[in-house]
Image 1: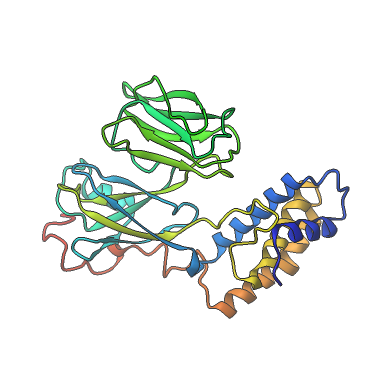
Image 2: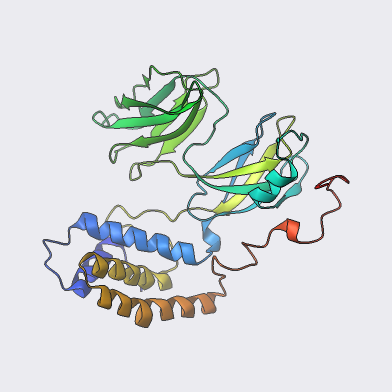
Length: 320
């Protein structure tokens, strides 16, 4: 059954059978979007696969893939040579190259986890601006490094589409976050010669999530990497918005939100009953019907390439 955000809220309120004054739209929307993330965390939907490209920088090993935030990186390919990089664990990478001194064209990558910027290879002051003239009361909090101290921070007020420049010169920026929702998309860039974009924050989000990963060996030149991974489902904000899944999965989002609602209302037994008798059976049924693999599948995670016979393109002394 097709369910949009408005009908999801109505049905969720009816099933919770609670005082409507307690169940504000904001709380209901939060539970529904969290439930949508829960479903995406359990299943690998092909339509959530997202491809992005980035350029390597000589001597830099860590990179950030934008829009591949909630799930995981699935593959990294050198677009110049059309050679896929092979995944290993970060621990294995560090054991093989503890001083990070090896250089060349990368042929391995290791996932680092979540990131909150799109580039960390530049320094300077920070510029912020919105795509909407209405955003004049919100602020953007910048965190970064100064003089090797990692707790440097600055608060920059938005002035609509007019660029606002901070006063602190950061050696590296770690994150940029807004203090509230905005009308437009917030762009954060370094005030350098290239105006390097380090974050683009959607109106309904507070931060630009990315997927961080390392490459081995350290690049010696600029090369193009094509990164494919699972993006976060589109958030439901407007009444007409619907879960970013096929229609048959919409009720699963409703059940996930129902579990969260019962927990929030201290109905832990009811939450457990919904999980065991409704959510889990339907999740397994849909997974079987769609032949989808869970995020725990060894086909995708947990089995690194260094656990099998090395590829012929490894150097002869690799790992010695």
